Image (tube, rainbow, N blue to C red; front, side):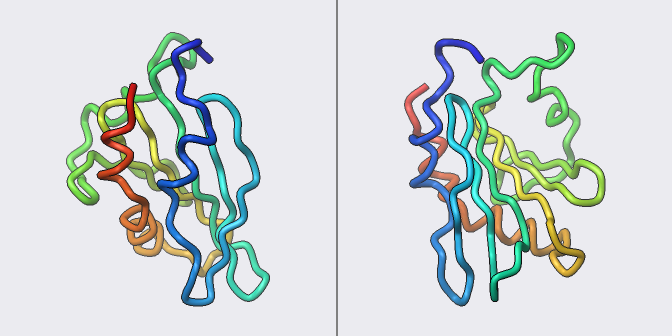
Amino acid sequence: MAKNATQGSSFNKFFPKPGEGYERVFTQEKKGFAEAKLKKDGKDLAMLAISDAASDVTGGISATKKFEKSVTKIAGYPAVDVGTTQTAVLVSDRYQVKVLSRSPAFSKTDRQAWIQRFDLAGLSKLKK
């Protein structure tokens, strides 16, 4: 991770707030990344994550490349599905917001709805 990557703790305030029977449990926080479990009735439904893609390079290909040909938008941001269990958006060409299903009952529609519960507008204003 590059030196200019955003501290993971800076992302926490942009995660969806718990409520309506849902519980949010932060599970990992490091430079460039923060993750939380979404639970209901004691069951893991999904993982919620924000990562700083500015320095996330895998095999020489930027993590943001997958968004270049996106024709789908969620809350105005380019969106992609990764396999059948992940949905992600790219905010400000830098921050990847991802929801991963951990239960068969948590659908693509659920993932898209939960992405919209993040404070994406606030995240887009985060100092780079």
